[in-house]
Figure 1: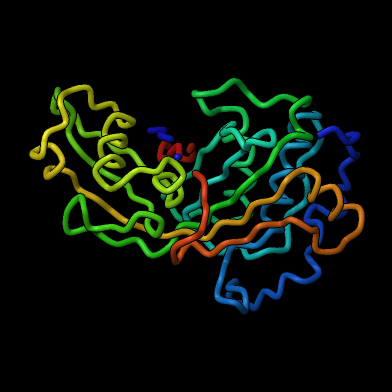
Figure 2: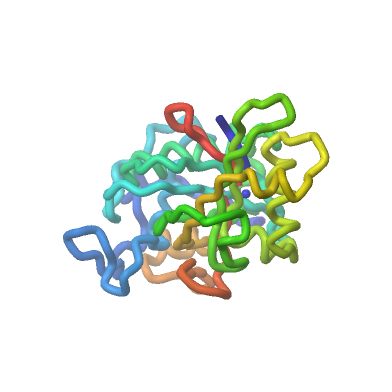
Length: 259
């Protein structure tokens, strides 16, 4: 059930320190950071660690130090200066963050059916984002959500009567310049609906809205942080609980999604 949302020398992975730059993570025992957020740049650094090991046939990195509470999550890979989508997969099941991020760092990189698998040669051009999904709510109807604030997951029946689902993470509609109707119609197409989209079709949708926390890191930041052990410049961290945030978006136990 899948659905969708640089030039430096490759460095030898330090398997003794699988989570670079974790000295200032300010995590408290319940796994929630003191600023109220779960997402942390260390999660992105860990994605690079995991993908590097996978692409170079190395042993997986050791377990990281960030929060390991269960949450739904998505991992997104982008490439180049224009940040073209290269892979994006996650799960709506609550999964422990250590194993979940390790799994989806690779799955989103090499198993997104929309793209060819990411190769070693692309590693230095990559950016990775981790989105932690929270605050799920049933929508009253297909318009009961806010562009730029909520991600949405829809359930509907296609023209053959089969139940289908599809999702967009919170940033997708904003990045595409879509309003609510355009987003819903695009999501129906993404979910495989091939008929005419009518008001009755839209009204038949079951909608779930959610919010996300997203952190994003580029390869260069990863290398600088891994080398120096300090918070890297250019690391973007956003809280998806309000406007202005930017996020990105599956395979675990048959409940995977693509952004």
